[in-house]
Image 1 (cartoon, each protein chain N blue to C red):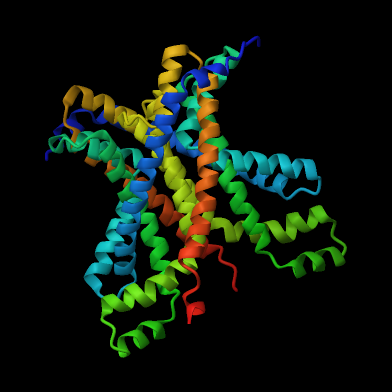
Image 2: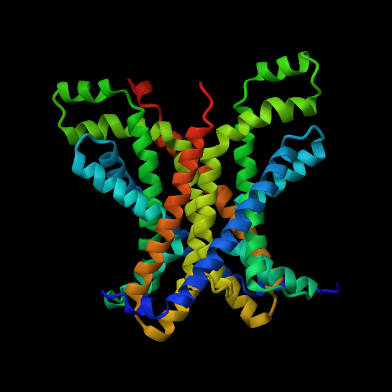
Length: 222
Length: 217
């Protein structure tokens, strides 16, 4: 084994790596917003009493979770070629709807762990069902499930690497380009591994802190 | 939507499905074994063993699966000069990847066994290893069934990523057929359905085993 390392290749490709990192972050943040939106709605429907929304939410969750993310991405990218969506948005849609199912399950569990009396009291005090959900149920439910959500978010950042397969120029894609240009497979892939480690560590810390701050135990506010 | 493209290529697609199931089975068994060993190393009395295991688990859990596969398939061979095919590379990557998650699940499984039982085991004259073998592990493993099957279903879905490094498992086979037939929606619907059935069946098996071996609270 006589391999001459050339880590300088990472420095020479620093601009490509930075732009890949930027796309990874943009992809992750937009998909995070999408997954939260989908998950909050489907989670509330899944925890609700009305039969039809509950069944629809359960069908969505099972369907989305039991199909690989790669297939989700291909569906938007070349299943629906008629839509001519740019690859980046195919990645966002695929990631949002796939991760949204996991967020929905977490949110549903959170809502179910809020005592039923909370909702009854909110409705009795004159809040509309939406207001009760928005101001009473969601804050408590999200506070309870903060660690699970933080875990899902760092999972989402890692999952975004699959967007490279549908030619989104994010971090993994850039590593492939460096490898193609220079044949420095080892340096390129170990380099992006380190970058992912840093981003995922930062995201899971920030997500935990951010939610703890933003979602301080609602009971303590009064 | 008609499925004539699927019907025409059924033997080829069936081969792909078979490879997917083979890869998933080997990776599940290998991943469970390595994961359990790693989890035990994570709880070992010798600090160095514990720290090395913890470092490995943290490294893998911070890395995307696709990158792990690319490291096994491209980066390590670049270093050693020895190439291995996409299918064995993918299986090695899957095992190395999922083992870290299973080890972490084992840790919470072990922690779920009350301290008093360990003390009672030791007080009754069992050695530390015997307490682990006869008292702690049986309960931890039974409590781990849902988490373990979560990882198995994840792994089954992950096998699709092997197509990226050139394995013609189910996803790779569907892509190859689509290159000739250009029926993306039909073929992707078939692909999604096949994964759905396989994953759902696996999670039902997990739920059944969990009920079968449930520990009364």
